[in-house]
Amino acid sequence: MKLAGIIAFALVLIAGAVLATEIPRSERRSGYSFMAPDTKAMQDDDTANPGMLWVLDGEALWKRKAGSADKACADCHNDARASMKGIAAHYPAFDKALGRPVDLEQRINLCRVKHQQAAPLAYESRDLLALSAFVAQQSRGVAIENSDPQLEPFVAKGRALFMRRQGQLNLGCSNCHDDNWERRLAGSAVTQAHPTGYPLYRLEWQSLGSLQRRLGACMSGVRAQAYDFGAPELVELELYLMSRAKGMPMEAPAIRP
Amino acid sequence: MAAALINVPAKAKRGDIIEIKTLMSHIMETGYRHLASGEVVPRDIITSFSCRFDGAEIFRADLYPAIAANPFITFFTTATESGKFEFAWIGDNGFSETASASITVE
Image (cartoon, rainbow over all chains, first blue to last red):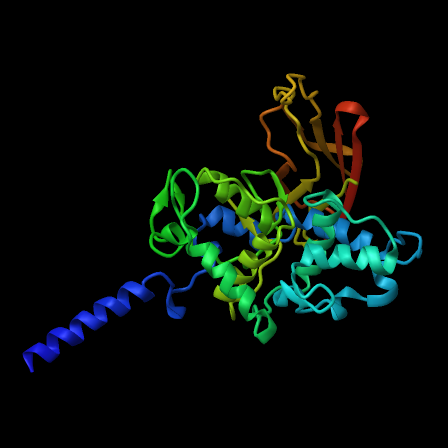
């Protein structure tokens, strides 16, 4: 009996060691909940949220004709308030032609090249951020969803990257965002890596930025070589992060310190 | 591109103290940064913000390089009568933007 008890306890420890890395569903929190009241107020009020400046630009771009096809987004997708509702909450999504997931920015550019016959917009350019912010805003309050079975191998790759130690500091994403999310790093909340509000306005950036920009900043933070924008590894990581946040409501364009 | 977000209550009672919030899109480049090549990034900031109510100036602010991008300026005023608020931002490189909002005072 006693031996069985010890074995059972040892098994719990082993299982605990394996599972310790992921945050239980009941303890998941948005980055919003770590913010100071003033910063929360900024996000909550659309006339105080500077991310809305990009949304307004995006709305104008949505209706503007572009490319040799002389078509606007609105010519195919009509009113974004109806056609884009909940779309961003499903991204990154599997693209059949490419055979891999693409994120929202890549989808916008695929659409530009294929249907508008226009040049793709540069990553982090004002126009691409504006369009992605406008599209993402239509999903505000919609629960993040990514249950497409075709995505599973890519989620697994993203998870492996999240767990892998890298850089001169030899840290994996998980070492901070799973194991130490309730602590602070140089005065800032570590948080849980739930990308509910992208593209979002970071006060530190004084600008809107994409999730890939945020990931690049974290990678330089651990002294690793950041991936180029649009790299499949970054999309897989985005996908894994969105799978962690499955069911949580979208907040784009969010504010973060 | 330049856009302003203005928050003025549409209605107020006479004598009420109301909050006015303005957010203007601007990079507010300080003039103190250098490129990797060593060149100075020239200053490009908003230098002045003003608010007029039915033509009379009720608020003015001078802005300096330490103010963050996309300046968010809020202030309070007393609602005296129905009318129109006119906002103006002036800055480097000929930057000039205006916006307006009306209020009904009962």
